[in-house]
Length: 163
Image 1 (cartoon, rainbow, N blue to C red):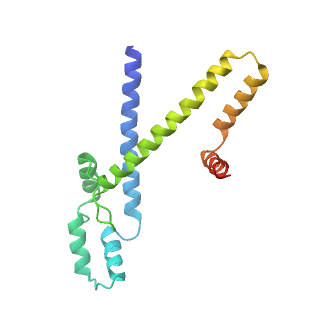
Image 2: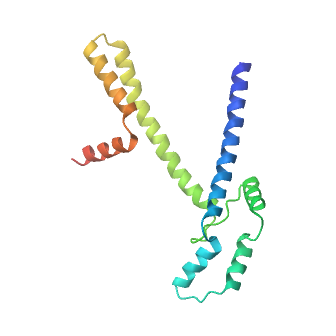
Image 3: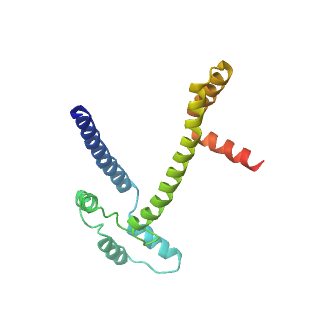
C-alpha cells in the first residue's frame, strides 16, 4: 500500500509540474505573437469606426496589466487561478472555461458510459463462449476499435447514422 501511495504522489507531482511547464510555454508563445491583446482589441474597435491613438493603446495595456513584467503577469495569474478576460469578447476566461468544461464533462461521461455498456457485455460473451469464430470476430472488432483513429470512427458513425 505504501508503494502505491508513493507512486500516486509521484504521479501527482509530475502532473502538477507538467501543467506548470505547459502553462509557461503557452504563455511564452502568446508573448511571441506580434502585437498584444490591447492592440488587437483596439484594432478591432478601429474597424468599427473608432479613432484610436497611441495613448489609447497605453491606457488599454495598463488596464489589462500588460505593462507589468512577463513573469509577474504569469505567476500572479497562475497562483490566483485568474486567467484574465478575453481580448475581444471582454468576458472572464474562467467563466468561458466553466461553461465549456461542463459540456465536455457530460460528453466524456456519456461516452465512457456508452463504452462500458458495449465493452462489458462483449468481454463477458467472449470470455464465456467456446466458439472460436465468435471470439476471433469480437477480438478483431475490438482491435479495430483501438487501432482506428478517433476522427475516422466519428465520421463512420455519422455516415452510418444518417443512412
